[in-house]
Each structure stands twice: as structure tokens, then as C-alpha cells.
Length: 118
Length: 514
Image 1 (tube, rainbow over the protein chains, first blue to last red):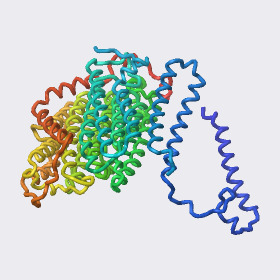
Image 2: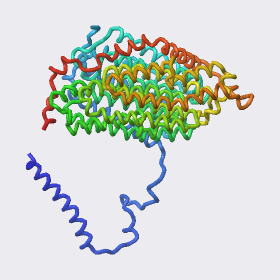
Image 3: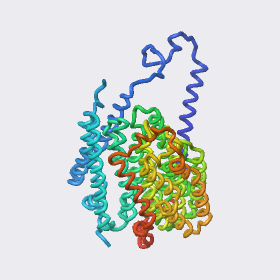
Image 4: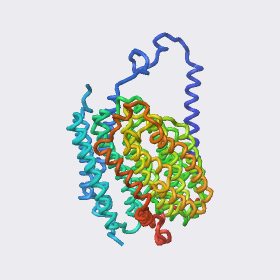
């Protein structure tokens, strides 16, 4: 039983050794000519503007939460769509209730101004 | 035997979950109303009346099921249909109804003009009902989360209050932490028994001989820790005083009464139904938890000068008394829990109702001394408060006495006489902080002539205070009817012998024995 895991263990060991090796060798072998730009944090090629530890609007959280709700909706909708015929009327009614509940929440959030930025 | 419901069919599921469905429908309707009408006082009052209608109609739906004596066809796989569910859901619904009634006047005075207040109470109540109805650990967790998330938001619903925001954040972080413990416990129990169904867990433990299985013990331990956080048992009580103090007072009452009762209902069902036969694995742990909670809660309450904080610590002590009922692990314990939770819901709603009347701005600053001379100025209010304090103390003639006596009886019946003695001693200590409230009201003079001028109970809040005080006295003198209901509601909480002998275990249950 435990022997079946030995390849996985070897693989894990290889990954760790490989990662450490790459770091160590690049540290030892690479020439070092630092400039100010090279020493600055890498931000997709953009020059950094300031600290990342800033306060930002709570509205981002609101958008993120609404996104998750509709994300989950898709997670349920796609398997239902694939198996639509097999699930039949029961699946249809269950899904209709699910979407109804979701839409009530959507209508509420919309009307309450959660989708407006200002 | 009453109506038999086959929960495997959609129609059966509809009838079996009728109260929850009714309340969900109302809550969705109220959500739309809240989206379109959230202007001010008028809309807020309308939302409150809708919430009241929702809760009352749900209560009738629940009582219809109860009157029909609906029972599941075979093992309850996801949703239990038994007296324990009906009785405990009734307690939550009554608690929610009284909370809404207290809130009607309170939100107007404190200018909380968000109809979401009532909406969240409805959703929290749905969560509680799901918790007490759960026949499966996953359903239970679902109900717990529905309830908890709504209550986190309710704690901080008064956005002008800094303390409310602090309380909400504290409650949210610690609550999420506790949920982590609970779900880990559920995972380990599933790992040991191969099922999350409460009946099948009991079957697995007996059939596979898991009484001393390490994984199961760890799972039960984590489960107990998770619940101890939720009910605020010492040493997991640190959040309780700050959260209870920071929340709007009707919400504090809701948390102390209904939320706590819901967590205990779920704990009671697991302990008696699933783990009743393997009581040796958990009884000692809960015994100690009950003892330190009773002693800790009462001793810390002694040191409080502010009324709201004192009531918060007193609710910790009462969690200890309820844990005593859990320790017995019998159906008598469950019946004692039902009686106690009912009496405690009444007294908590009443006491916090009085506090809401005498205080302003979240009631954080009301000291016990501030009640001086209330009896001279507002005799009825003072009388009601005296009834609540004596009932919390467990004075003979009040419902609190009968409730404590019932808990004591369940402990003695389970041969836990030491725990019974500690319970009585802890109750004696509690006189040290309940009686000063009564003495301040009746024996001291008002500080100024104008004191208590504004302390007038109005509208629905007055009905709550009056009705709870009257009911507490009524039950105190005539407890028989309520005792019968409690007993008959919990006498089938243990899985019946037919299921424990014949039911199949989960397909992968054999893996656990290793």
C-alpha cells in the first residue's frame, strides 16, 4: 500500500531539490551589477507609484461578492444544462426556484444601488 | 402515528419543509419591498409589520405540521420530522416575533432606517429552523452559517455606532474561527464513521465499535469546541460581553435567546441522537465545560456595574446551566433543554426589553445604580424587571425556578449529582448580581426628580414586557402543561431500535475500522 506512494514522494523530492538548486545556482553563478531600476520591485513593467498598503473603497468587496454569486450560478447552470433532459421536470423546477431566489437578490442589489460606483 | 411524509419525493420535501419554505417566501418578498421602499420611518415600520406577519404565519405552518404529527418515512436522511424540531422551532419563532415587536419602537428611537434589519432577522430565523431540523451534519452546518452570517451583520447594523462596528467585526472573526472548528470536527466524524447522517453515525459507532476510535474522539472534541464558541461557554466566551454590549439591544436579546437556543438544539440533537450510546467519549469534556461556564459566568457577572454587560455575563452562566442538561445525554435532558430555552427566551426578551426602555444610544451606559427608584416612578416596569431578575435567578414561583429544577432533575437522573450541587451553588452566587437590581429599584430613592421621566414602554414593546412577565409567573405556578409538551416533544429523540439494528451503514463505512 505505502509503496504505491514512493513515485509521488520521489517526484516531490525532485521538485524541492530542483527549486532550491535553481535559486542557489543562480545566486552563485550570476554576475551582479545592480542599478536603481533593477533593485526596485517588479510591477508588470510599470514604475511603482508608492506603497501597496493603501486603503481602497469598500465597493470593491461589494463587486467581488456579487461576482461570486453569479459565478456560483454558472457553476450550477452548466451541469444542469448538460444534463437537462435527464433531470427532467424536477431539475427544471429546482433550477427555476434557484434562479428566482438569485434574481430577487439581484433585483434588490440593483435597486439598492450596489451596482453604481458613486 | 400521524401524517407520514416521504422526504425522497419533491412533494414530501415540500410538506416536510413547509415552515421554512413559507418563511423563505416571505423573506424574499420583504427583500423586494426593501429594495423599493427604504426611505425612512414609514417604510421601516411597514417592513417590521411584514416581518411580524411572516413570522406569525410561519408559526402557524409549523404548528400545522406539529398538529398533524408528521413523521418521516424511514430514516430522516436530511431533514428530521419530530417533536423536538417542532418544539425548538417554536421557541426560535417566538423569540424572533418578540424581537421584532421590541424593535418596532427601538429602531424609530435610535433612527435605524434600514429595512434590512427585519430582513436579516427573518433569514437568521430560517437558519435556526434549519439547524434544529437538520438530520445531517452538512445541513446543520448550512443552517448554522445562514444564521451566523445574518447575526454578524445585525450586530453592526447601526452604522453610527463605533461599538457596533467593533462588535460586529469581533463576532465575525471569532464566529468564522468557530465555524472552522465545527467543520473540521464534522470532517473527522465523517472520516471515522463514513457518514454525515445523524442516525447512521449512531449505527456506525455501534456496528463498527468506534467508542474509543481516536479520529471520532477528535471529531467530537472539535465539534464541541465549535458549539462552545457559538453558545459562549467558558473558556470560549471572550467575544460574548463585547458583542452583546455593542449590538442594538433587541438584537442582543435575539442573540442571547434564539441564537443560543438554536446552537443548543443542534448540539442536543447530535449528543442525544447520534452520540447518546457512546456517551463515555464526550461526557467528561462537557461536564467540565458546564462547570467552568457556570462558575466563570456567575463570578464575572458579579463584578459588572453596567446592566447590559451584566446581562451578557449572566447569559454565559445560563449557557452553563443548559450544558448541564446536555451532560445527561438523555431524552430527559433534551426535555429540560426545551423547557429551559422557552423560559429563558421569555425572560431574556423581557429583561432586554426593559433595558431598551430605560436606556438611550445603545444602552451601553446604563449602570445598575441608574435604576434607583424605578419602582416609585414606574411601578409596573419595575415589577416586570423584578420578575425577570427573579426568574433569571431561579426564584420559586417563576418559570426560571421550574426550568432550573427540570435541568437539575435531568442531571440527577443521569447520576450527575455532583454537577447538580455545583449548579445550585452557582445559582446562589448569581443572587449576588440579580438581587441588587431589584434592591436598587425598590429600596433606593431616584437620583433626581426628573429620573425615569422618559422611561416609558410604548407600543408593541410594552406588550412584550407585559406578556413575558405574565407568562413567566404563569409557568412558575402552573408548569405542568409546558412540562408535558417538553417531555412528549423529546421522547423520540434517540434513534429507534429498529433503525440501529437493521439500517445499512454507509458504503465506505468499513474503511474507518482499518
